[in-house]
Length: 172
Figure (cartoon, rainbow, N blue to C red):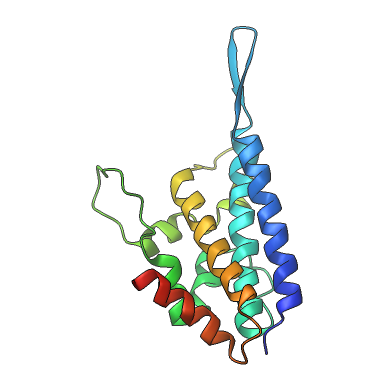
């Protein structure tokens, strides 16, 4: 049974972390140096993705995965319905040229699975921190769009119909 009220709260929180990402990803000049808050920006963006995926779980099932691995984007993604996974993955691979073997959406998601957990402790030695900001931004924007559409159409008896309506919009 969908939990739309909690889904709205998770989506709102995700939108706040996305706004925080936008603010912390700005650059500024101090004397003769250019500064940024790149690490907090990536943490905010990754957490926005996690909260957004959990919002989709609340829309679909009324609950979201909890526990030790509940920050993992792949787990959160794979436990969504097939239709929602399709909507998220559609056009989800960065468009700029790659200098390695082309990757699938799931390859990119796997590369970013633990970004939130790892980047929170960027100060710890030994971590090889990588994140594709373009991929994460596009992912979060898609998740927000899908969740907002489903919430707006949640008056329908079947929440699947709300998500399904979104897929018909994308296919046109």
